[in-house]
Image (tube, rainbow over all chains, first blue to last red; front, side, top):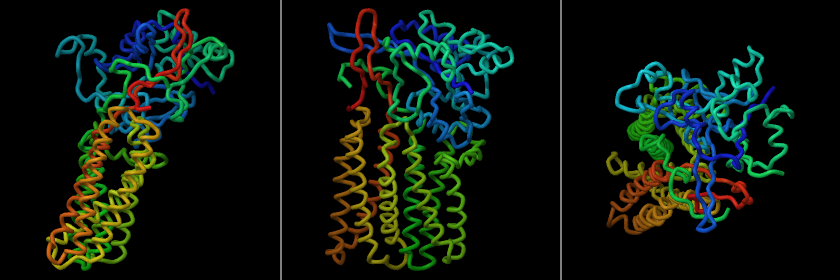
Length: 215
Length: 298
């Protein structure tokens, strides 16, 4: 069984936020909700300062605290490692949101629009009432992964079967693929480079790997 | 981690927005209610007093659960809360709440019998579930500390004993003489539980903003919420004949301090994890540098 993960090469990221925009476009998320966002971290003191850009979002943990605490079983984990939400089961209690150490979950109670108090034509067309007052987050564009099973395409290689954020990345920062396959793009990247995972000490076994230097 | 200066912003922990005062009220009502249910079993003395005390206890637990119901996004799907007993402490709390109310109401109806003891023990289980709900919240460092569980249990017992003490001021007859000593013992246990909890969060680190809430709170809580009722109870033991209101006042303060404690931890100190990097990546010709954990005490 595959274990889908994402990698971010922090040496390459320029903080352009194209992944954020692509995600919002692909998933029609409302204003203020960013399933994929890029942190802009300035650290140090002049003249020894450093700026780091760090894509974050749901880490699709192998041991996801959000799933364990969910009282309704709305949050589930697929065999391929993707953590998803069944919007029809979720009661919007927010327990998953306080259990997630990556601040990856959002609950929106009121429809808001990007440019005015009224919805634009595209916002009307793509409004999903099932996502109101329930938890939502990145799902690794799982519909594309599922479609790949029918078409025979390879997630992380074929764009149609790859998350929108990865497809859009202009600097080749983000990569997606099967960690269980030693020949996959992500396995190769992790074999050739040094990496870390965020808040690993919390025991969540996150599925998002940050590359920071060559081996 | 190196202590590099990071401008405040979205990288540092911020106050979570999903659980507000309504969630705090669940822990307040649930803790006091189950504590009172426990002590009403031991201290009521007769069926009439038990009925009143147990009714107040169930009203508090029910009030807390109602607050949670008002907070959830899809209240008409609330039945789904029972779907995940395998791992969810919220489901377990909900499942335990049902027999707490059934046994409590049966005990009130019959005014005694096996239901009284069952309601009290199930109430303690409900209280334990509440502690574990907080501990399982991995995204909130002030909640996930394991020593929060004995703290929630201890303050529940203090609040129960305190409210029982206060209720005897309006109930017919006198409460048992040992109740004040039990309240004093529970207060000492809460003091120990608070001290252990605070030492643990100091040792393990916490978002600075959460510590800025808890440190000054702790100083006031130890004086006003702990020492004051302890002195009042001891004074009541020696001078109770002259000043009969001392123990009553101690009970009220002990309950109020428990509510203050839970409101502070649940509603005010609920800063999330934020983001951190174990190392700073190579950029261009640079080299790997020590990581950062902005907005944390350590």
